[in-house]
Length: 96
Image: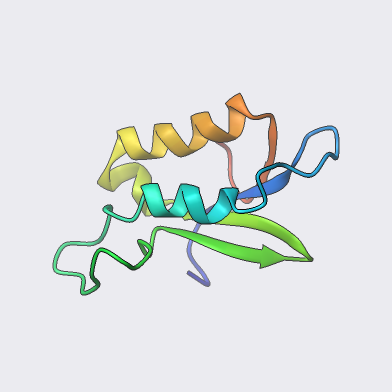
Protein backbone atom coordinates (compact mmCIF):
# COMPACT_ATOMS: atom_id res chain seq x y z
CA UNK A 1 0.00 0.00 0.00
CA UNK A 2 3.01 2.25 -0.29
CA UNK A 3 2.18 5.54 -2.00
CA UNK A 4 -1.54 5.12 -1.34
CA UNK A 5 -3.57 7.16 1.10
CA UNK A 6 -4.11 5.09 4.20
CA UNK A 7 -5.50 5.23 7.68
CA UNK A 8 -3.41 3.60 10.39
CA UNK A 9 -5.22 2.41 13.50
CA UNK A 10 -2.66 2.04 16.27
CA UNK A 11 -2.92 -0.49 19.07
CA UNK A 12 -2.65 2.22 21.69
CA UNK A 13 -5.36 4.42 23.11
CA UNK A 14 -5.21 8.18 22.90
CA UNK A 15 -4.06 8.06 26.54
CA UNK A 16 -1.10 5.82 25.63
CA UNK A 17 -2.42 2.50 26.99
CA UNK A 18 -1.82 -0.66 24.95
CA UNK A 19 -5.08 -2.01 23.49
CA UNK A 20 -6.16 -5.54 24.36
CA UNK A 21 -6.60 -8.32 23.40
CA UNK A 22 -3.15 -8.68 21.88
CA UNK A 23 -4.56 -10.17 18.65
CA UNK A 24 -7.06 -7.36 18.04
CA UNK A 25 -5.41 -6.32 14.74
CA UNK A 26 -5.64 -9.82 13.26
CA UNK A 27 -9.26 -10.13 14.42
CA UNK A 28 -10.26 -6.83 12.83
CA UNK A 29 -8.44 -7.63 9.58
CA UNK A 30 -10.06 -11.07 9.56
CA UNK A 31 -13.55 -9.58 9.83
CA UNK A 32 -12.73 -7.27 6.91
CA UNK A 33 -11.16 -10.00 4.73
CA UNK A 34 -14.18 -10.21 2.42
CA UNK A 35 -13.62 -6.71 1.03
CA UNK A 36 -11.36 -7.07 -2.01
CA UNK A 37 -10.84 -5.46 -5.40
CA UNK A 38 -12.97 -6.94 -8.17
CA UNK A 39 -11.31 -10.05 -9.58
CA UNK A 40 -8.70 -10.20 -6.81
CA UNK A 41 -7.21 -13.56 -6.09
CA UNK A 42 -7.15 -14.88 -2.56
CA UNK A 43 -9.14 -17.36 -0.63
CA UNK A 44 -11.13 -17.04 2.53
CA UNK A 45 -7.97 -17.50 4.60
CA UNK A 46 -6.23 -14.32 3.43
CA UNK A 47 -6.56 -10.72 4.54
CA UNK A 48 -8.09 -8.09 2.30
CA UNK A 49 -5.46 -5.91 0.63
CA UNK A 50 -7.47 -2.97 2.01
CA UNK A 51 -7.24 -3.89 5.72
CA UNK A 52 -3.92 -5.38 6.83
CA UNK A 53 -2.47 -5.97 10.30
CA UNK A 54 1.09 -4.65 10.74
CA UNK A 55 3.65 -4.21 13.48
CA UNK A 56 4.82 -0.59 13.41
CA UNK A 57 7.50 0.53 15.85
CA UNK A 58 6.68 -2.45 18.04
CA UNK A 59 2.95 -1.63 18.19
CA UNK A 60 0.18 -3.75 16.63
CA UNK A 61 -1.64 -1.66 14.02
CA UNK A 62 -4.13 -2.06 11.20
CA UNK A 63 -3.40 -0.26 7.95
CA UNK A 64 -6.59 0.60 6.05
CA UNK A 65 -6.31 1.58 2.39
CA UNK A 66 -8.39 4.69 1.72
CA UNK A 67 -9.85 3.05 -1.39
CA UNK A 68 -12.06 1.03 0.98
CA UNK A 69 -14.00 4.24 1.63
CA UNK A 70 -15.24 4.28 -1.99
CA UNK A 71 -15.45 0.53 -2.49
CA UNK A 72 -17.59 -0.13 0.59
CA UNK A 73 -18.55 2.94 2.65
CA UNK A 74 -20.13 0.83 5.42
CA UNK A 75 -16.92 -1.18 5.84
CA UNK A 76 -14.98 2.09 6.10
CA UNK A 77 -17.48 3.37 8.65
CA UNK A 78 -17.07 0.12 10.62
CA UNK A 79 -13.26 0.36 10.91
CA UNK A 80 -13.35 4.07 11.72
CA UNK A 81 -16.09 3.43 14.29
CA UNK A 82 -14.02 0.61 15.81
CA UNK A 83 -11.11 3.01 16.31
CA UNK A 84 -13.32 5.75 17.73
CA UNK A 85 -15.34 3.44 20.00
CA UNK A 86 -12.13 2.02 21.48
CA UNK A 87 -10.43 5.44 21.73
CA UNK A 88 -7.55 4.21 19.55
CA UNK A 89 -4.90 6.50 18.13
CA UNK A 90 -5.14 6.95 14.35
CA UNK A 91 -2.82 8.57 11.83
CA UNK A 92 -2.34 8.92 8.12
CA UNK A 93 -5.55 10.65 7.12
CA UNK A 94 -8.73 12.19 8.59
CA UNK A 95 -11.45 9.76 9.72
CA UNK A 96 -14.45 12.02 9.08
